Image (cartoon, rainbow, N blue to C red; front, top):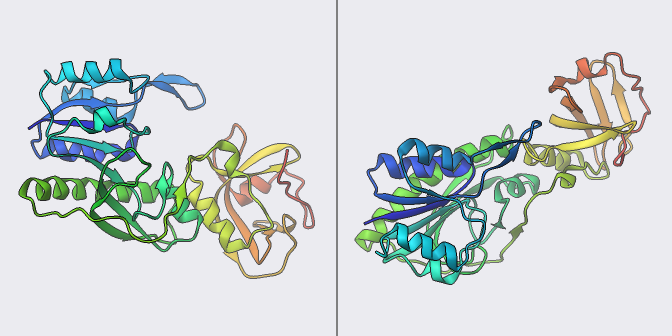
Length: 311
């Protein structure tokens, strides 16, 4: 009745914890390799690895999901087929030989209402694109990118105060509960898989340069952009060659020219393609986040000045 769990970031931790606390037999955890993190670039284990080791679960960290790894996994399982593969934000598409291993099914926990936002960054893309509702889907896995049949779905509201970090935390908890319901329902034969319906949209991985602010967009879209890019990679602009991250902002009615400072005394208002964006909390390079009023102290930012979209 064993389960093999594939997962890497913090989003996957509640699902692994829920399985463990439910008494599931987790034969192995597969996660990405340790990687440098933060400003110090110290090599750190993945969040899933940390929890698995705390539980005393065997951890595998393959560089590639090739034949050598598959054979290693089969030996770990003593060549007995697991009941389920459970995949939660692992970060790679599983090959056919691995997907065919479980006796019941390979199950994926995905942070969107499929077929909307297939891919690596569904949470950020849902906020950036102004969605008001998102959710979690459990699905049967195939060799495509989040194209498998749907098992269960649960919706949740995207709140105006949400950023990608806070929404990820809520969806991770939703996903953990939905996973337990899914496994129970599949064991009992109570869940009938159904095809994905409607137009698909895609959420490719985010890159650091994706956070560059385009001041020509409407202020409401920039408000969503800032939230969706937080905490990583962060929305940013350049001021005399210095990269400045925008941690928190709000859209304001008013007239202004894109990228042009409308007010820079106690408040930093910047013109957008439509309306104004008030920068509430910013983070200069190498410094901690600070309120706009503190940022403006000692800086020669005047009304009519231009915040650049390039270094």
